[in-house]
Length: 206
Image: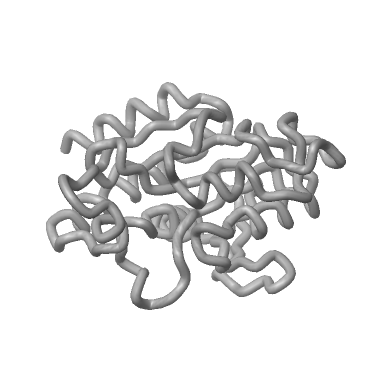
């Protein structure tokens, strides 16, 4: 039985593959590759690309919702309900314009910060209660873990920024950080977010 659910947020399709908004997908790819998880396959019942694997002793389901960003909640809820995952064991990786490029923060709960994927997970109906139990108020609430990956905030058009691609230099630095994130991800899954964050700070400064 899987112990944790790892969700990478993004938009499906080739035009979005390298966009800043898809950094959650990229993070999941790095984790899947690092631990030799099963190849991603489409699970129609969960509206997602799907993988399974063991991350340093922690059995995980890894998913990329294929519903487009602002409907991510539909996919996430379907998996949470089917496997009865509690909020403590759900980790959502996503881009964040309020953090500088390569800055990473991990927190449980909080506001959606204007991120439509997070908002969809928070508010999608027919889901779980705030406590993460089945048969609750019909909402996920915000008590799952968010892994916020900084993409920086532009001076002007935010939409153009998040849907735009990283430069070659940025991509190289990002991939190095995501490799480090994958390596130390089990720390976070076991509740040691402080040491996980130490590694992320070191990675952002190199």
